Amino acid sequence: MPDLSFFLPGSGWAASGAGAMLEINLDAIAANYRLLNTRTDNAICAAVVKADAYGLGAHRVAPILEQAGANTFFVAHLEEGVRLRSYIAPTAHIFVLHGPMPGTQAEFTRHDLLPVLNSMEQVAGWHAHAGKTGNPLPAALQVDTGMSRFGLSDADVATLEANPDLLDGIDTKLVMSHLACADTPTNPANAMQRDHLRAMAARLPAAPLALSASSGIFLGPDYHFDLVRPGAALYGLAPNDDASNPLRPTVRLGARIVQRRTINAGDGVGYGLTWRAAGPRRIATLGIGYADGFLRHGADGEGCAWLGDYRLPILGRISMDSTTIDVSDVPENVLAQATHVDMIGPRRSVDDVARSAGTIGYEVLTALGSRFHRAYLTQVA
Ligand SMILES: *Cc1c(COP(=O)(O)O)cnc(C)c1O
Image (cartoon, rainbow, N blue to C red):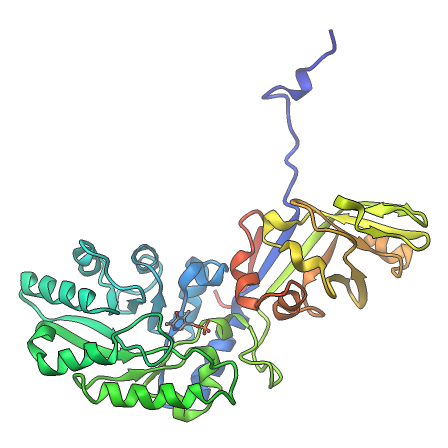
């Protein structure tokens, strides 16, 4: 009978540590907020922290944005708003983009959350709720200026104009819409949506107006109105393809080198053996894979890691927990010192990774998983 005690519970599994490390630079996020705030003159610069601040951790990110001057926040869902309320000052405004689903209005009031009312049903629900509480209740009205996603239609706005009592009890703090093509400055849809917002707002109760998210800010002052709602730019993503990115990168993703080996001409690497060595290569296996949100398509195109100034191409397919790279160009004495390589870092941005994977930086950021060790960098206390 072999001795199996080592494999049984309580026999001392060594803590293995994480396969990868995600470093989140809170100071860079604050600097990006300040830059966007300066760029938008008199408009209020809100901060979008939905999806757990694009995957970076709203509990750490929102308070830093607050210190940098933000006092208006946007999330997508009620649950996100409830959680965010506990991280930031009671005086901060929290707008919930998807608005109140039936029966959830009281929850908004309880947590002092501002709904974005997107449909006549949501308007009616908020109106009825205000009637019950006996007080006018603040909210934003969203109008659809051309994206066909959220917001009141022209016909809805006409109905409200003809029946203003439908808005009784609703204290309209903001009239907002959202641009479909802001990352393409030359797209004529941008100006059409801007003009459409002005026309629709003229038929609604007077309120501050908002249209632009990150990319819209860079379309110029004509798109700033009274409030802007950047998300992606806070986290360092490029606002469009044309300009060089003025924002600071905010994340660094380092993957642990788990194993190294030398392979010979003809040897294959990874599932399907889709990559084969043309000659002898030195390769390394990293502790990061698609289950960490390092997308499987990241191996297509120009997928690579970096060690300092050495570019390390990804070989073959990305596995669930591991990725294999070519380290042949790195001198042995350098490699011997290295424990991690950069998957995202000074030489490779989130947007670069997205391009290799055939997607956008938003998807890469929000996909980055919870399996990493996370470190938050900040000089601010
Ligand atoms: C997500 C979102 C934003 C933020 O967009 P970014 O492109 O990340 O700046 C702003 N407004 C609305 C309505 C959104 O859904």
